Amino acid sequence: MEVVKRGAEAIIYADGERIIKVRMKKGYRHPELDRRLRLSRTRREARLLKKVREMGVPAPKVMEVDEENFRIVMERIRGPTLKSVLLKEKRSDLMERLGELVATLHRNNVIHGDLTTSNVIVSGDLYLIDFGLGEVSHRVEDKAVDLVCFEKSYTATHPDFPEGWEAFIESYRRNYPGAEKVLRQMEAVKRRARYL
Ligand SMILES: Nc1ncnc2c1ncn2[C@@H]1O[C@H](COP(=O)(O)OP(=O)(O)O)[C@@H](O)[C@H]1O
Ligand SMILES: [Mg+2]
Image (cartoon, helix red, strand yellow):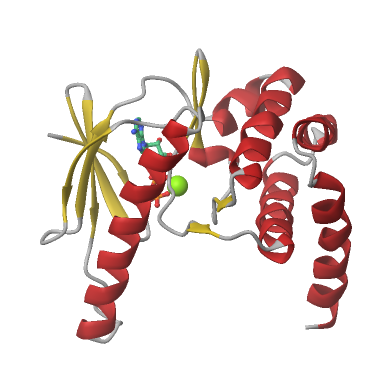
């Protein structure tokens, strides 16, 4: 099996058309806390991947969840990350599509928890991955925090493409009736963050 990525938390292996994501032990965490975190993130990720697919948001199919070994086997989505595509060309159309997908998540009370352009794969459509920090919440605050974190990471990664962010927000607004409240709350979240 080939290692696709060795991340801070997980190792991603590719095996033909399947991806295996294994959450590794962190030596610096207390063993029991470490076990609980790996288990809850593995479960969350598998549960949310299934849930978002049901609401029509493209995401890899989950084939197997191995709770003993903190392992998820899922469909391999062939294609570059949105990050690498946007670093080569300014594709507002892709950010517009992403706005629609995140609007669908939030409309259905799913918080991604780690929105970045690395957690989106471009393969015809856009596929969302990496739901280990996600949750179900109807709170405007949680949706606003999801977007503030995304904005921060987007701006750092794509400083030369602010039009992409604008396209994202415009489309989020168009596709989610609750968007105005969330966008207003973002301002409050940012104000608070400045004073922390
Ligand atoms: N289902 C998948 N299909 C194809 N590539 C994937 C898949 N899942 C993850 N990857 C690749 O592995 C990288 C890291 O996976 P991710 O789930 O985001 O883990 P991490 O928590 O380490 O960020 C992704 O950016 C992507 O390049
Ligand atoms: Mg990731």
